[in-house]
Length: 112
Image 1 (cartoon, rainbow, N blue to C red):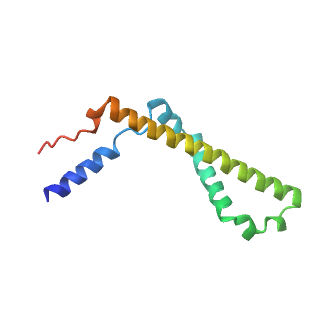
Image 2 (image 1 turned 30 degrees about the vertical axis):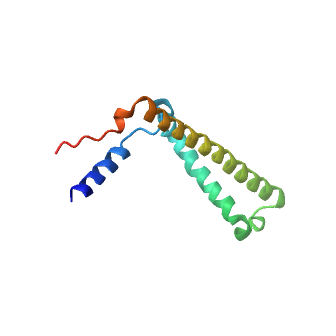
Image 3 (image 1 turned 90 degrees about the vertical axis):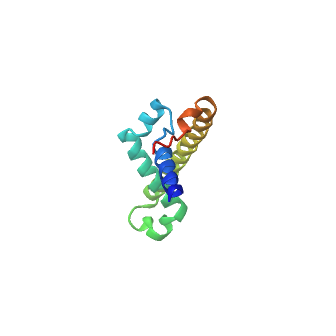
């Protein structure tokens, strides 16, 4: 039973560790960035599943407008993927930096 409590304590401690530096974390949690993350993820989902083929957007708009909508969606998804790759790279490098420079934050003391 003690091992289960130690695992739960470790998971709680790891969940509360900062993943990003403070300024980037503030930017990442800003309301406009959250909206961008939602719409970007939705654009990626639409692009990957090729939902435009199922929706038949050409039935609702003329050819030029439907092509513009598809282009903007693919562009938005591409920008989001670049953003996501950069944030993931920052998370990995910051995590490695924290492990090397400040390993004490990863220690879990048993206070029982």
